[in-house]
Image (cartoon, rainbow, N blue to C red; front, side, top):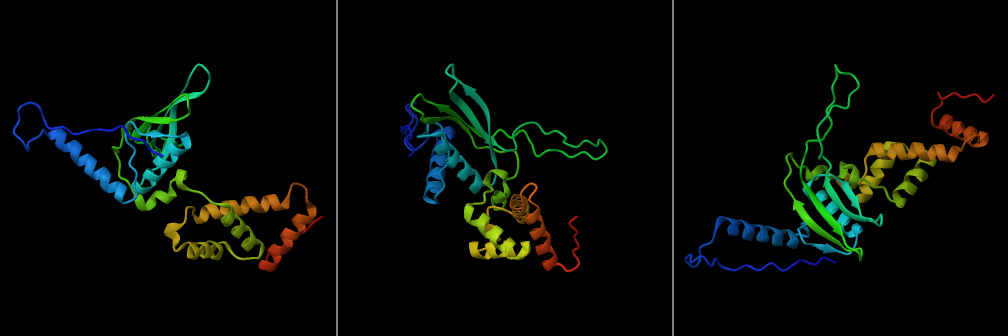
Amino acid sequence: MVELEHVSFEPSKNGAEAGTCSLETLNKEREKILQSEDSLHGKVVPKARMILNSEKEVYNLYIEFARQEGFGITKRSTRSGEDGKLKYYTLSCVRCGKRISTAKNDFNPRLSTKMNCQAKINVIIGNDGRCTISNVNLEHNHTLSPHKSRFQKCNKKMDGYVKMRLELNDQAGIGLSKNFHSLAVESGGYENLTYTEKDCRNYIEKARQLRLGVGDAEALGNYFSRMHQRNSNFFYMVL
């Protein structure tokens, strides 16, 4: 549930002629129209003085807005009160912060994706747990890519159904490519997936390790046997 402080529009009282207004007023009215259009298209734009019931609601609102706009988000600048409870925090564009090299080799520098982007929302948490967005900056200093939003770390997710499908298909001997393709078809296209083929590969590898268990010789033998059935050139020996 979102509550907004009412903002009224009044004509200029400086004696200006009827129908004329300042550039600032025009810009404010244009912003109202754009925000109304966004709401009609199902997009909720974060605004200062918005009040939401919890931190989760604030996060869900901003992450959905970020997904539609084409950027990732991260939580930073937290501040707690004397009672130790969180009182203030900031949700920022993932490309905030200074751009520095992450490479160990000076001859092959790799710059981070940080660009000191200032897009963010500041949130104040009241004693009742409700959250007020105190400040909003929607301006980015880099290109946004809505069609690539699903690749942002904050947008990647794999639910229990997908994990179960991956494991069952893997145990049935279905290769990763076919496994991933079947999920894409079921979702109506690769663009609707919230994970990549690499994410699936990483999950399957972890699932295999868990199935094997530490020191479980029988499970290890069964695993090698399955590998041999898939590939006759695969050789193993248990001593």
